[in-house]
Image (cartoon, rainbow, N blue to C red; front, top):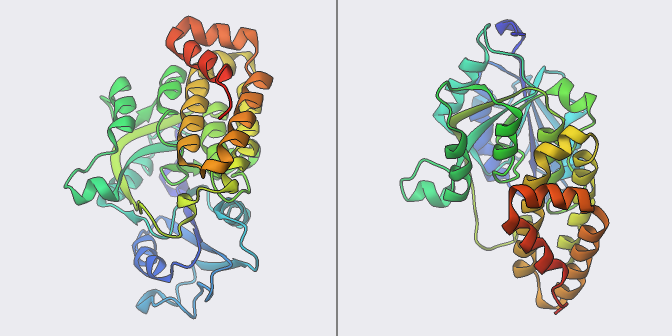
Length: 333
């Protein structure tokens, strides 16, 4: 089923915390897109507030498409995105971070998706580049993500991907801003971000792949993700907030086992993700928290990796099963 081009209306939801400068850079980019009918800025208790009075937008300041919302207490980007989604009236929605920027190929992708013969889709996944790579003149994702794109190839771009191809591309970094979602799809399946301070986008990413019937993928590099190696950004936290990740992973696991065909397609991808994430968090954590985290990780795997699931994963990837066994038998530090 194709959609009519006059039905493509896009809302952009932007969580922000103490980044008036980023908003002042991003909002004119977003508002310049004619397909954008709503821009919902959700301020996560910034001090001073990130609102119309404090953002220098020039001629865009009075644009009627701009909607401002605010949480009086800091609750994280997941809560901000969920709050923004509740205000969306457009057919499609893009989550974007205030310090990231849109690249020219995004305009080309929107033109592709606006064509009357474009198949209906639950979401469209596109490529991104992070600021470290772009500073080096490289307009492509990190090699770890590009590997998965190369594995499927896209001779006709953009196009609908198969379920098996989705099980490959779900392994790209779990970010909220590399997808254009059909609003109805998110609401029908109650897909959301976990309302925790970090890792809040894990649930959104993985449940989207597991619930979707129609996924379009495009190799267009549509945005630059800003990466800061230090500072006060939430992503740089190494404290107990990291232990909340299991709230997100419980939702992912629930989606994984929701139907036999979902488990069959996604089990090895999900297990690989769990193991990689656990190792990354362990290495990133403050040392005094590592024992508690590893205990929680082992408990999660023992509770959720049933013999049939592990057998299925091991059949496809014996090395993955060995990694699982190593982690489960690893002495606590």
